[in-house]
Length: 450
Image (cartoon, rainbow, N blue to C red; front, side, top):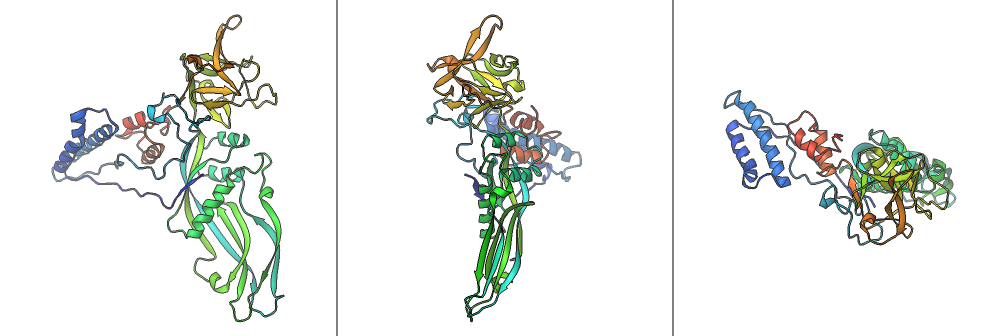
């Protein structure tokens, strides 16, 4: 389910007053830090603000007591995200820190944070074109008939291609996920507040329906969501208003979401703004998978690339390679360098570059609490001798042992919320700013500092 809202928050940049006033502000800002030390997020924020004020005050002092200086915009702390995350999309253990494991899950299937999201803004529109007139008549046969194509939604591929124009960092992992059966990942849609209620509801509903699967990704085409219909529109009786018949086309950017035929009173069609309405739509769309390193209770990391010739999955120390970065997508465990993990009746788990039709290796992995399961069996490790002398991923009966306990560790985790980091990045705080040290510690992923 997508969460909807009606407008985007505004932004304001303050100017700095006289140095004497700045000095008081610095004292107020840094007081909590002096009392308790920098051990809380609010204290770190206060310290960053104090440093900014102090530097600006120094610059102002060079120009004399009456001189003024402009302080680079200080984002409010803490920022309130414009929309809360949709239920089930936040990693259950996130509050425990980036190395927290998923423990004590109540449900059999534990949800990971599957995607990294980015806000984009594009135009949505509706155009209404009159194609016929119906004058009031006492004759019941006074009708207007039309046989035309109707479209009630678009397809995932069209939605992906349209949003990709505005989210340049969107990766091919989105299409890969949809080819596995996923919906196009949209977390939130905000329609400009000036839009009519009907416009907002139609756009939101159309995006929600268009992002879902109607067939396999390869076979979904526009023809699968269109149909040829014959409609007959009847005139009002004499004395009642004349009518028009019109075509209505709804678009997101250049992509058609809906194309339908209706009739209405002439007076309605003559209202200002009836023929066309264009509004801004802001969407939170996925741009890449959220990647994790996966560590078992013995401190070893799941690795896809150590022995790809034999197709076996090893467990080794951390090396931060793509072979050790994983995502769980549609119950497929996939490494960032493109290997699918398969476990089955053979206890040895394997990797392959594409899905297998071999029923012995289903490739379906479920996350239950801290256990990675293939069917009824749990993934663990086994040390093997000649010719490998290495530790490999295997499946065995679940016994609750330490080697069967797995932790998902976010790769390049933002300590701050993604909305806060994206806001600060848009103001240039990642690099060459007085806030860059804070960003380097709290928004590493957003600032691409990994």
